[in-house]
Image 1 (cartoon, one colour):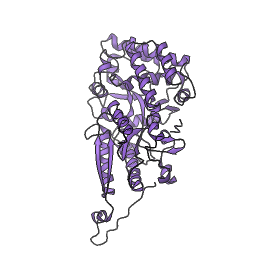
Image 2 (image 1 turned 120 degrees about the vertical axis):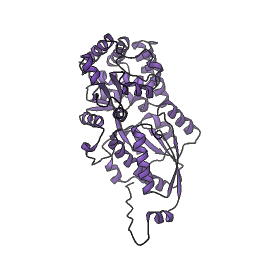
Image 3 (image 1 turned 180 degrees about the horizontal axis):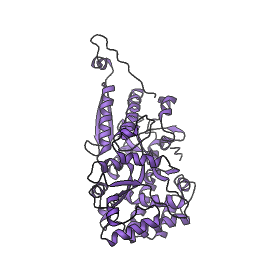
Image 4 (image 1 turned 60 degrees about the horizontal axis):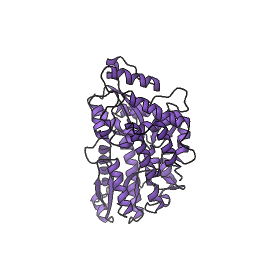
Length: 422
C-alpha cells in the first residue's frame, strides 16, 4: 500500500444591461449532486464552516442542486454507513471520508474517481506540501485535502492554578499531575471511551513518543514490526496512567460528544483530542481558562514532543460512476479549497490549502495556538484507525479498548498488534 498520502475557474460576470447571475444560471446545464457529510447544522464549528462554504458554492454554481445526507456522528456509525454503501455500490456522488487505509479498499475496487485527469499543476500547487499524501494511492490522486488536524493536550489552566499543579511537559510530570489531581478528588482526564478510537489515540500517541514518528510510519506502512521495546513501553505507560486513575470509572461508556461537553463544562482539567475541538472550547464557558500544549515527551525515548498525530486525513471522494465528472470536479475543487479556508477562519481546524488569511483576524485564539505549535512539527503520523486497512483498524481499536479495561496485559497488547499489522 502506498499512502504518499482542476484549477479553479473564475467566472467573470459582466454587468451588461439586464444580464444577471440568475440569467446565466438559466443558461447553464442543471445538474444534481448527491453528497454525504458529517456536519448537520448546529453541530459545532466545522458544521458552521461547511454551511458557509455551501452557501458560497451555491452562489458560484446556482445551476447545481445538492441532495445532502448528514450524519452527526463522524465516528463508527458514519464509517459503518460508508462501508455498507461501498459494498452495495450505493455511494453518493461525493462523500466525506478519510485517507490512508480506510478508503484504500474502495480505491482498489475502482469505486472512487481518480482525479489526475481533472487536476492541474496550478491546483496541486495550492495544496500545502504533503497535504494530499494520504489520498494518493499508487501515485494517483483520489481526494483533495480539506483541513489539517493534530492531537494536542487541552489543559484547563484555571483548574491547574487552583490546585497548585504545573502544566506537564514530560510523561513523568503528567503522571505526577494525575496523582495530584486524584489526591484532591478530581478526575484528571475526560475520555470518550465508548468510541474505541478515542482510547487508541492514547496508545498511538504514546507509541509515537516512545518509538518516534519515523518508526511508527514504518509500522503503518508494513515496513516494520510492532514488537519492539518501545512499543511495549508505550502500552505499559498507558496502563500506568489507567491504574493511577487518569480516567473516570465510567469513561468506557462515555461518548465523544459527552466527553466534549464534560471538559467544556469545567469538570475535568485535561483532555487529549484533535485540534478540531478548539471551536467547541471557544464556544464554552471555559474558553478563557483553556490552553493547548504538545502531548508530553517521554524522557530518553526516540519520540519528540514536536511530533504529532493527525495530519490532513479528511477528504471528500467522488464516485467513479458519477455523471458529468468534469463539472462535478470543478464544483468539488472550489468546495474543498473554500472549506479549508472557512474551517481555519472559523477556528475548527488548520488549513490544508495555502492561504493568505491574517491569523490575527481569527477569533479562535486557541486554534492559533495550535497553529503556532504545529509550525514546529518535526514528524507526523496519521490517526492509526485511518492509516490502517479497515479490518486491521477495527482489530487495533479493539486491543486498545481491552488494554484500557484491563482485559489484556501490555505484553498481550503488543503481541496481538504485532499479528494484526503483519
